[in-house]
Amino acid sequence: MKKNKGGRPRLTIGAKNKTLKMCVTDKQFQELQVKLKASQYRGMSDLLRAMVFDRRITILTEDTNLHKLLFELSKIGTNINQIAKRCNIDSIGGQPARLKLSDKYNISKAVSIMEEILNKVI
Image (cartoon, rainbow, N blue to C red):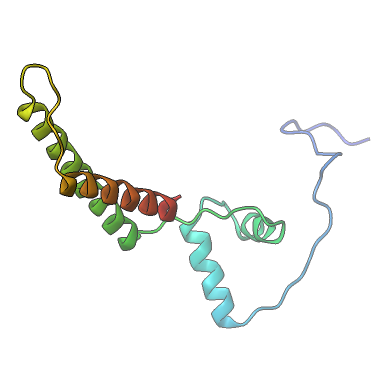
């Protein structure tokens, strides 16, 4: 009878006891290595398991397009704040200031652009 050496007990349910073998080209192998380094997975098996079973794979990258979109979104928010400030300053005797037609158009356009940007990001 074997003596218990301690440590974590072996899995009986859900144990990974089957091995798959797969051949890839050098280029494909390099691409997998890059994805592995950029992901949160500890090993190639974890990455491939996630890819095969159609789970989302999180890859950490610097996305310059995302930075540009967020910068534009920030500029639009600044413009909306400036319009709101002007409305508050222009109000007389507690009555809200009247927006010019061009201001209403700019607000509407800014909101629609912000929705488009958010839809691209999400």
